[in-house]
Image (tube, rainbow, N blue to C red; front, top):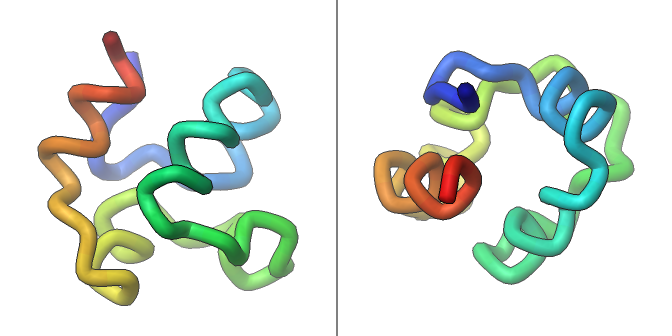
Length: 60
């Protein structure tokens, strides 16, 4: 289960197919080393994305 506190690096390591959802949401920095240690919640705050909506899409 993917949660707000899931780190982007962990998410992509375990579910590489979810990268498309993150890119569609506006997270184009997935390859950036700093993003790998960020949680979904932190990244959404930076990018102005609704974290609850994104988590729901990732878990669908």
